[in-house]
Image 1: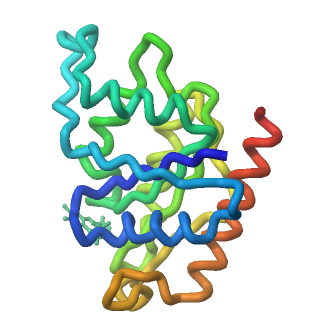
Image 2 (image 1 turned 180 degrees about the vertical axis):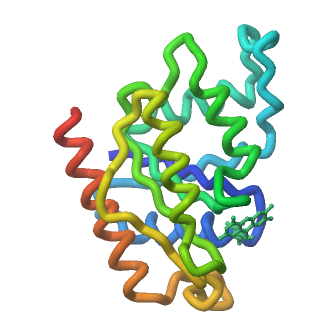
Length: 180
Ligand SMILES: Cc1cc2nc3c(=O)[nH]c(=O)nc-3n(C[C@H](O)[C@H](O)[C@H](O)COP(=O)(O)O)c2cc1C
């Protein structure tokens, strides 16, 4: 199983990108996680230009289309999706062959705040419904007060968080098996 890791953060020291790395370590050997690193290169979506899809946008289309499943780790900005991430999702929603259609997606997120991206995750689920993706419902992985949960090298050290992520990956694999 090939899982595409998608971080909603552009930041070099992103906690959410670190969560994806932790998830990669927790996957069983027969599965692999490949992180998409071109989010910053995606131009603003303009409906007038959508039929000439830029290469940087096509790269994300192809990465999602060729993955068996997608694992998103996103920050919460102003209780919702970071603008550049939402912009990329808007590109991904457009035909031909929008790549989230029928795709299995798991969501997690980390925040220094007390609710650990709960609000953005519900907004993201709503967006993915319109794109006809199948999102994992349980467990919900809200990593609150996240700064204390990584060591200086960026490794996830909090066992409870690692357990939630491991359980999410199992649910992702199970949903993929059911959806096909
Ligand atoms: C524009 C902006 C808005 C933010 N809004 C929220 C918010 O609504 N809720 C929250 O928990 N944290 C909020 N934060 C703090 C982010 O959770 C924090 O910067 C986090 O580390 C970003 O994720 P990253 O480490 O993956 O880049 C906001 C940060 C920025 C820059």
